[in-house]
Amino acid sequence: MDEALRLDANWIDYLLVALYFGFVLGIGLAARRQVSTSLDFFLSGRSLPAWVTGLAFVSANLGAVEIVGMSANGANYGIATMHYFWVGAVPAMLFLAIVMMPFYYGSKVRSVPEFMRRRFGTGAHLVNAISFAVAQLLIAGINLFLLATVVEVMLGWSLIVSLVVAALVVLTYTALGGLSAAIYNEVLQFFVIVAALLPLTLVGLHKVGGWDGLTAAVSDSPGGAEQLSSWPGTALTGFDSPVLSVIGIVLGLGFVLSFGYWTTNFVEVQRAMAADSMASAQSTPVIGAFPKMFVPFIVVIPGMIAGVLVTEIATEKAAGGEPAYNDSILYLIRDLLPNGMLGVAIAGLLASFMAGMAANISAFNTVFSYDLWQQYVKKDEPDEYYTKVGRWATVGATVIAIGTAGIASQYSNIMDYLQTLFGFFNAPLFATFILGMFWKRMTATAGWVGLVAGTASAIGVYVLSGDVLGVIGLSGQGAAFVAAGVAFAVDIVVSVAVSLMTRPREYAELTGLVWSETPRETFRDVDAEALPWFRQPTKLAGIALVMVIGLNLLFL
Image 1 (cartoon, rainbow, N blue to C red):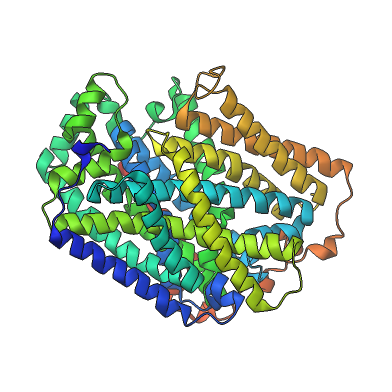
Image 2 (image 1 turned 90 degrees about the vertical axis):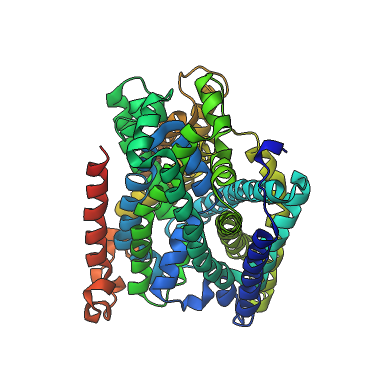
């Protein structure tokens, strides 16, 4: 462990963290009493109100990757990191709410891979379920590694001991209460995270001389004034050409990666599926979009402050080295916060990392139990049997995540690793989903062949990139944007070609699965129109869209 990073916590800080852990485990125990069926364990019995699922929706994404990854990006690239929120998140969240959720919720599927099975059959379903499960184990490892890092710098324990202890806490409440425990903890964690990061941002701005002081310091840093503009973001993408950089951000991040993540990623969709009505399910991503568009002000801005204020990062950056960007937020907490506030900040980081890992694990255990075990191993067992399988899957996933945490530890900027994974798994899945949902002629064979071809092409781009062989002059997140775009295009081309050579299903069988074959009233919530305007998903989505466009224009 880097002794310079050791946080000087005292008994007040430890007490605050202990109280937080007490609340977390208490919620798990309370949620266990509500679990009587597998639907309760995996989808909270589809009984939760929109405000709960909406906050859980954004909190599940506000994990280690968001806090550490985006603050690292802020220190590394500056304002261009805002694209991950205002271009690469909110528009896709609104699309999920208005276009996709009626299909997911209305069809009463229990997972995204199950929707794939109904649309394309077992071939595409098996490919999707396995790739999703693998992705969740890898991403859970990212969250666990960063969670263990905080425990390590707080207590001075070795990384392996920190990994095991952190994993046991998440395992306990997720295995006890299932999705309900994860969701209610995510709501608590959202407020703890804000309580931790908002004061850190304000103290950091004060220390650096306010916004004017920050902009002046960033302008004088190696990144220069370019880090104060969101466009064209050439440093972020790695493109020398501003035009190609903008295209890469808009199409690679804003369309393929973003829509691929938010509309097909069961980690997020699962929260909306737990809602108590169609209107609540649609409102879930919309409610989440409002805090999501303001999160960068308490995540990216502290990263930028760390880039100019933290000695270890600023000195290494000036020397042209490779600073430990992943530690930006920890260094800032170490340098700026007194005891008491330090405890809240540590609890906030632990909250964010546990939220992310619990979301990965709860999504994994649902897909493993329903889509793999029940579908292909044991079909006709009693309901309680699958709840037990889900709990054992939670244990297995946690153990594997301890191993995959070692992979995450190899990256100095964790966002490079994450965007690479998204290019592999989410981009081709989005292509298959969007084509299959809007083109009734697409066949079952095309579903799984397109997925395999898209994933293979993304892996191929990664191998050719500067991160491996160096054939392509791009690396990191720029290479991930290109890989995602290639995966999407290859998936579409292959799927169309295969569809034209194979026989489609009878169109009458596609009601509820394909847009053109589904009457609009099929998935319409008749009670939604009687709700006040602020609870109607379409109107709320319109307001959110106007606001995010305004933020993009403000930080040009």
